[in-house]
Length: 222
Image 1 (spheres, rainbow, N blue to C red):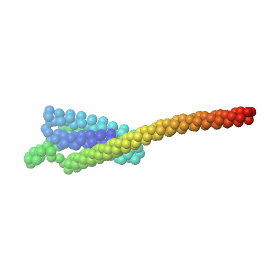
Image 2: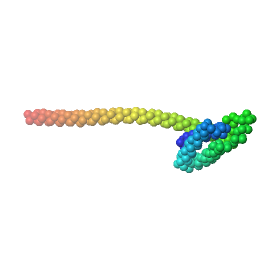
Image 3: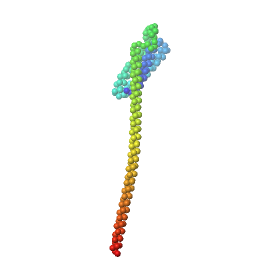
Image 4: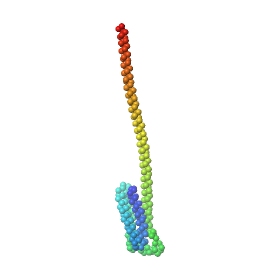
């Protein structure tokens, strides 16, 4: 799954959880500046959630088919959740919102800002669960990324060692080439000396033969 999509998903889950809590709190406030301020915060949060939904939609449609189907399925859940948040906001912002229910809760001593209806508790639990799942996926992605990074470092180290081995082998081959060149030069010099010595020996032999012939001729003439 895309890391970008998971980042948007985590932001949305956190935002959805906060909006649910603010809606629950606002529903128990009397009409006044405090409630208007709380409703303004909720409206701004819903607008931000809309932006995140659009970003997730664009990112999901740009993925490969295998990941795309999973992301679009999650996106449908988040859109449904956002619609519920919008309905809750509309209900809370209504002038006659649950006035009798709030009075009953006040009378029974149960007017806790965190007290919520069964439906709200369920939605809050789902938001927290999605947030936990998103956190787990992000941690798993980070772990995979770290393992990939470690594997990359190991491969680079192996490649560096192989490069050093190749450089060392190249140095040895260069030394062998130099030794071969020296050997060729020595053999060439020896061959030249042998050729020169052969000519010298041949010349000496010819000279001796000529000297012998001259001596024999001299003796015969006398």
